[in-house]
Structures are given as C-alpha cells and as structure tokens.
Length: 203
Image (tube, rainbow, N blue to C red; front, side, top):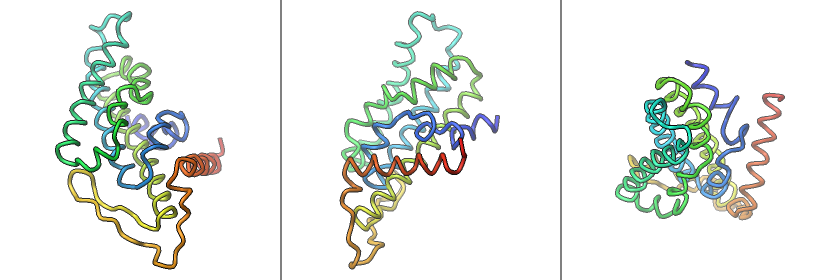
C-alpha cells in the first residue's frame, strides 16, 4: 500500500513522468500560492472521485462508465468551486476557468479509468492522495521559482486557512526576470524540472 501512495510522488509523478495535467501546471503557477491552491483542489477531487468510482465500479455498465465517471468527478469539482468561491474568492478568481476544467483534467479521468475502476477502495484512495500530492508539490515548486525569479516576491499562506501574504525576499536591488511569470517562462521552468528529474532518476 505504501508503494501505491509513493508512486505518485516521483516514480509516476503525473507532471514529471506521465505528462498529465500540463495545462494547469503551466497556466496557474505564476505564484506559489496559486500552485498550492490548485493542487489542493486536485487532491480533493482526485481522492474523493477515486473512492466513489472504486465503490461503484461493479454496478457501472462498461458501455457508459466514462459518462458516469465524469458525472462523479463533476460533482466534486462543483463542491470545490463553491467552497473556494465562498472562502477564498480572490484565489478562485485567479484560478478562474481552471477549477471547472478539473472535470476534464486527464489526471483525474486517467486514474479513474486506469486505477480506481479496477482496484480496492483503500488502494484507490492512496493512489488519489499520492498522485494529488505529487501534482501539488510540482505546482508549488513551479510557482515558487517563477514568482521568486520573475517578481522577486513569494506569496505565502495556506489556501482557506491563512490569508496570503506577499513577501519581498530578493531585495530592492534585484532585477526580476519578467519572462518567468509569463507563459514562456512556465514552459522554460517545467523543462528544467523535467531535465532535473531525468538527471536524478537516470531513466
């Protein structure tokens, strides 16, 4: 069971290995706070949808399993969107369309089809947690590096629990590399992450 959980952290990391969920990984990581906010939303949706899909897998006709899986996922995405709009409206506004688009995020549907529809509830829950946390770590690091080097600041805080606080950590003499907080900077930073992962694991 521990192996199932840890697979998503590095060995089968959804962004660095499986190349899933790249759109939100590139689009919302202009700050660390946005990255961790998106990651927490994905952890909740992925874990809960994996649990429900594993519970109902034997009663779902194979011909209509995908529409049913999407309906389950959409239900948890709706809950996530409403909670974020109510408790963290500014974060919800910044993430924008990418919260509703979790419904069609290939990480969520991919794990539902490849794992949760075939495994036990406990294994599916651990898979969802592991994949979600692995996704969140990458988004947080991407957002943190892009924000620090691109604007000289770091937005700290934990979504919903703590209000974000932007701290200038590079000093007034630092000249930000504005490219890094723009879309090309996201591709550049992610490319460096992929290179480092290959260098560390050598596969």
